[in-house]
Length: 184
Image (cartoon, rainbow, N blue to C red; front, side):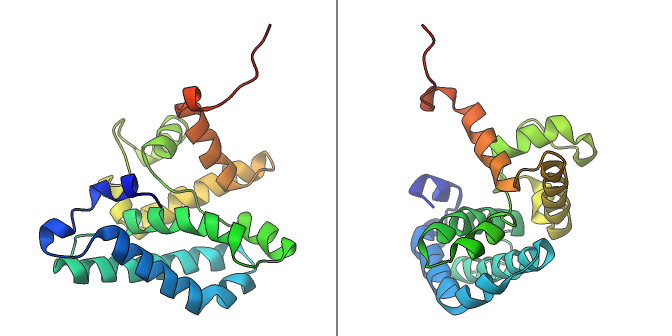
């Protein structure tokens, strides 16, 4: 998770430490303690529970640092962790089978890029045009899980992994950063 992602968290203004330091301490401890548990996850529901427990732990850590009960909410915590979990699978000694299985369970980091596609396709969520990781409804675990399940179900229809949606949403919203072949 890069520094620009932490711009939204004014933890130092609350007298706390840098949000990136707090986050990296938490995720380092989480991964060192729970890596074996993560490797054993066999289905999407169990992975979703892992994300839920991990995100609630991060919420608790940030709120303690900020001395405020609602400084960090569930959706923002889940987004940060989802960004990290995606990279953990590349670098943490997973077997090919473990990596392939777990990649299929990864949740989509919900932010302005990923939410806009969902907004256009899943009207039932009533996602506003300016929604981002701080969108009020994402503070609710239930809404977060419903959106993740919707993405999973849509991806199953076309035989792709949910994380592929995130990659497509990012690429489509950043066309100048993609090196497409030039036609002659």
